Length: 116
Image (cartoon, rainbow, N blue to C red; front, side, top):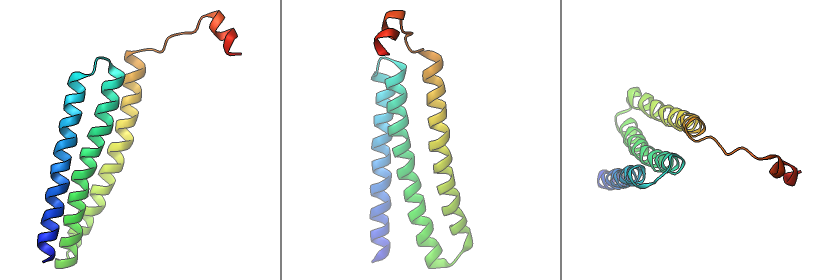
């Protein structure tokens, strides 16, 4: 009984990941400027990766409980670490790309005085 529920959960997570991955690709192709492309790619891509990682973690925990193999626990920990690193490094890369490609407009002297 639990195997069918796990399979349904894994299929649901993986299908949702495919959907968010498609949204990410479509957003990268449709949006006109680098900032909106980076935002769409970052958010939808991380969601797709998080869903795939969640499916892997669910499978790893189920296999660890049923077979009592330590390799499945190590797999779960590696998947969590991979997701954390992906989110952190993707955020840094997006900030660097957005700042290097499209500089923010500089304020004129009148605008600077108005802000003060």
